Image (cartoon, rainbow, N blue to C red; front, side, top):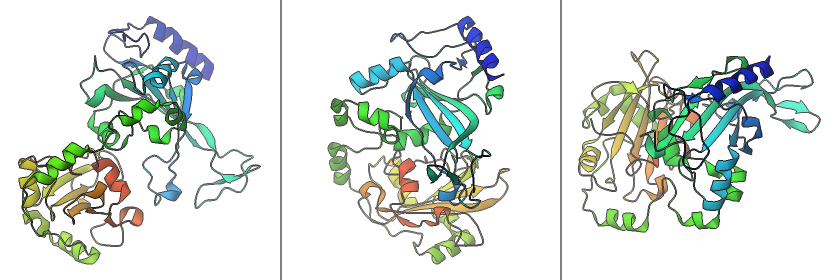
Length: 367
């Protein structure tokens, strides 16, 4: 059944109209309505890595709890090896698989999901659970860097023939801030790391700050202010419960989908800014003053009830790669001990990774 499905897809791909072919001679095929055709030869592409972030290591709430095996089109890979850059037309296929739960997988640990195999206890690939595609095409897309992202479905029998891209904000904010090379997480793919030519090491990476930018930011005159929010966990939680943060400065006018993960990508949020941070954002300062604060209300699916808060407070004059910011995300409005990843404090990597792409670690824009 799977092979028949792939065969029919191959016929469809041949019949599709390729509009705006890449000058590199490789790249995706587009249908007449601009959808991208799902590649059917991805198994022959170059395998670059297979990240796994299981629930067991993420408080039972991993955003991506399956294997994500990633492949790059061979021609695009050759271009990357020569130049260290991803050319227009680059396609990266992400094939998701469940953790293996076959009959010969003895002693499955219910708590962490691991499986006992002849090679030892570990995590192993199970059945296909999704097919996604990342495409770079600056001639077609105005999204940051020209990168767009597609989801073709879950099991192979459900994989769609073509797809339209996700909204840019749902993926690009994290890719822009945390990816090591041009919106691609090359730091997690050993084949790409090993193949990248040394000349590329001198290029600014995503989220990096040049020496000139640092010197300029240090020369800016910014007001020194006390933070309107405490950094002690219990005091901060009581402050949030009281709603006093709503008076610290301007706020977004309405609840809207989040551009970042926050447990589930796209969940409703509303952001409140301290006056000092608002003034710094309006003044386009490179660095925000010590004491700047932002509170993001986290809502339920229907956007009718606040279920928690994400907070960032600048505790030092220098951001120090995120260590100058205090971070916490409360997952409850009644229990201060329910904190995402049980992590609270300065330089939390789960927070700085995405926020690195903002202006001095602030992604949200003034209303």
